[in-house]
Length: 230
Image (cartoon, rainbow, N blue to C red):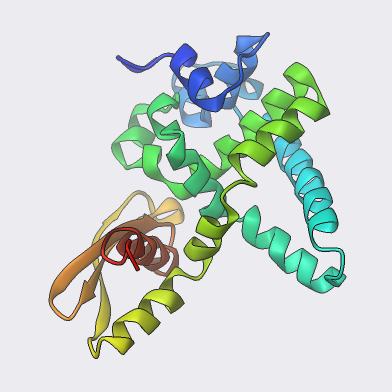
């Protein structure tokens, strides 16, 4: 485990204590770490991610079904997709500082793996799978509601951040622009780092697996800081 960070600390942040803490360890173990240490391939998070994805979709579907009794199937599907998409789950992971607790290989860690949205999303799903195996569907459901299906107003802000920021800046008669300042990682898992500017003023920074998601993150950060009191 990384110096200064313990599984106990993470469980306190999660608000859940595992009966079988090895499930949490597995949920935090990336394949690069397992490969470097020649650990059995099933001892990384991929199988738990598969399970957690299914549990998350079921719980989210039930939540949306009851919360939106008049909403047709097509809209429910789109809404569910926005709540369980990679940027949304990565945002939830960042709220737990999950990247600090990951078991990553040296190469993956050196290329920004701890902040990579695709990894954080996968680990969030793996943890859901681990909670499900450790305590069953009711506890997993409570965890999903508390960690993922909470503060939906703020999540809605995140989904629409670029559009909302553009409208606010236009009303001020200013110009919004984005600048890619850095790229990290291998071609198939590249992370883009973006800055958002209002005219020449830096108002937000973000990162993502592509330029669009990095701009979305930067726009969200700008709304949370520059326009926080509006």
